[in-house]
Image 1 (tube, rainbow, N blue to C red):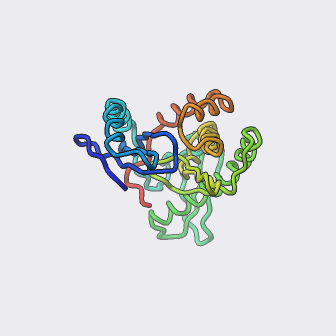
Image 2 (cartoon, one colour):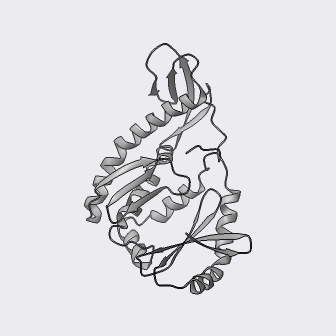
Image 3 (cartoon, rainbow, N blue to C red):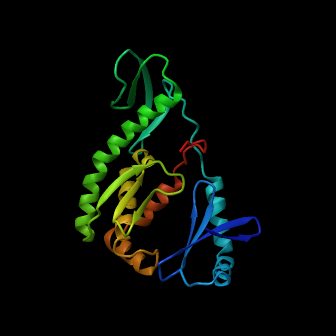
Length: 237
C-alpha cells in the first residue's frame, strides 16, 4: 500500500482496475484512502489529494465532533439499541443455556454465573447477528429484484471503517454487525449502495444516478446513519 503525506494527514493509495480516481474518509478517526486507476502516476494522485484537502479536513472534523457511545458493561438498566430503538438491558443469572429475549422496551440477557464481560458481549453479538441475518436477507432479495442484479452471498462482520462492502468479482456482500442497532432504513440504504456496485464499481456520477433512480431518499438515510453515535473506540476485532 502506497502512502501520501500532506502535513499531518496520511493518505493510503490503492491501485485498482478502475477508470476514475476515488477519495474516501472513514469513521471513526477520519482515515483517508484513495483508490486510483492502475496506470495513474503518484504525482497526479498527490495533486488530486491537495485539491480535496479542505474537504478531507471537513470530514475529519465531522467525525471528531460526532458523539460516541459509552463503553458497554452489560449491566441491568444499561441502554442498548435494536433497529434504531432504545431498550433497557436486564441481566439474569442462571445455570442454563445463555439466551437473549427481546421484549416491548427491554432486552433480557440470560447468562451463567460468573460470566465475564467478554462472554456477555459474545452472547449479545451472536443474537444481533442472528437477528440481522433474519431481516437483511428478505431486504437483499427485494432490492436485487428492483435493481436487477443478483449477489452470490452476504456475510456479517464487525467492521471499524465501513458499514458494508461489495466484492464485484465474487458478487459477495458484507454488512457491518452494528447495522442491527440502526434504523432499518439505514440498513436498506447500505444494501442498495452495495448492490448498485454490481452495476457500477466506482462512486462516480453513474453510480449516483443509479442511487437516485432506485432509492431517491438515499441521501436522507446516509445523513441519518452518519449522524448517529459511533460505537466506543475500544472495539476489539
